[in-house]
Length: 440
Ligand code: MEV
Image (cartoon, rainbow, N blue to C red):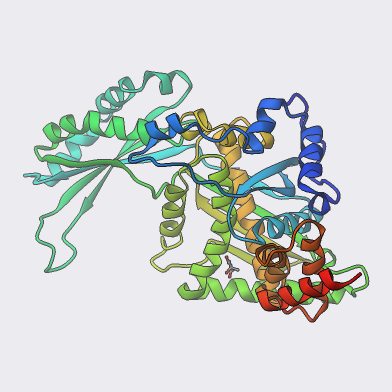
């Protein structure tokens, strides 16, 4: 672990530097050891033998770009945040929005304890009322049995905490089963994602649950709707922060109102909310992939949580208040910093290190903060110039490389496309490259 916390997550001119310069700047800034550097630079990918142990029918490895989000300040601390993603603009957008939110005092996050839910399905129960009463009566015994299945978790302060019982009745005429009981085992999983611990406990106590209830135990599995493991992140952007140096402050206010309008559109409409939330997940997933998390679990939980009030809606909301734009997001975040891929993947390990955190709660808060920042950046662009302009400007370097520009030609072609009215296409890039190469 680097010894000293980074003084700041603001690295001047980082994006303008060459790859080598960026690496040197980051390594010096964080005091990274060689192993961590090699992990980040991708010099030690996941060993193929490890990959073979992880999944089936392995034939190779799949890489993707790893960037760093700058400027994030969360609960008074700066963090440089690794993001693994194939989509252009996402890292730049998150860094820019983090800077805007920094101008409002940085982001603030809070979390509930790391409680995961395991489910055991009980069918064919002869007397539901009696079974519910008996299961409650046996709660202590069941919790003790579940705890005995993961003494290590109990040792570090986690373990099973409660049992909740839900009754599920037939939905309609097409539902052929009678009522069933679902037992929720609530487990404090501390710094783990928790799936293994919870699944083991559910499977372990299921026979006893069947015995007590007089029914049959069927499914025994964790729920990805981790709505007892929530993160909330809030932040403000003062109007002035939206303005370029020569713009009047009213301009900033107009931008803020535009973002509020965009937010309310998503809050009211599931078609828009889906895309709004996709933008949020662009940021969150990129952090989760970089740090070796089960991002599908977080995705599933986030979208289910977005529908919890009976209608799919936006995960975040933005409001104009007291001279600033206020943003807030709440979502479940089942992530871990022990076990899983982090143990074996050198890049995931190094990515976690550069954030300089030690708990799953901090990782969850950072991921949610990046989600909120990403959302701010998307809404700011959508409510103003539109998303394509900025996106294509950043993508123009890829276009230049794709049509054969090399070295300094790449930036020159990209710059000239922007200068020529911002029309970004392979044909235009080709013409510019030919002109460049013909010039003396
Ligand atoms: C694109 O990957 C994400 C956006 O569509 C998000 C949004 O519309 O809010 C730009």
